Length: 309
Image (tube, rainbow, N blue to C red; front, side):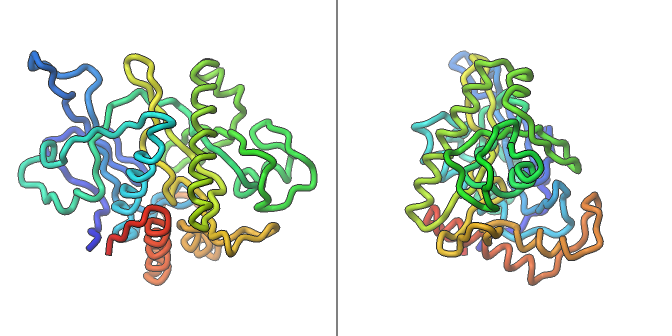
């Protein structure tokens, strides 16, 4: 049965970041033959069951969500390894967890990874006009500086997928869409082009895979990092319902926001409240939590063929 974890507690390990969903710990690097640690080091990433909406972490967890996110990420990392390397290291958790830790609580939700230098941008691919892209298009006819044909409707498929990066906001703040030129200014043209090309290549491949299973991948965001040699890796999470917008193909209609395999039930509920979308977030009713959990589970089973309960 899936476990529930709102916040990890691993005494003896250095907690270097507690994000909206993931807790990240530093690990010593893999040992070389001479007994010294590799310079780059490693990370232990734990996906909790925390839920965020509108960039605010909510007080109630979605039981088993972290396990589902980790399993679907691992599935996609494996499936797309022919496109770009990823951060995963094949290290058993029992070798790195502190003595006395309940391995069953972490086995499905924690991974050991390379410690990379993050590329400071949210790398987003859009194949359909929805969300903030739809709002930008309505206002300007463009998305992240990319001019789109006039007359497009909400949720309409774009002529071709586009790269629409955004800033990486701190917890409690909102990401902002930026142009490709802003990415070039931030990281240099060569790395910016590598990130853009990898983002679109992964999106196209994954969208085709999902389509064969009756699911539309409307958009998704990736995180990338580089090692000491400058090699680019995809990292963090990958093509999860938290980082992607998945629609059941049989319920897709142009002109409306289709139902999605994600936390849309939570967003819809929050929109009914008198809440300013700033921390602290409100509590979520049990029925909304359960319907959201079921959507994550359905996405995991339909895309990856994995059931956790």
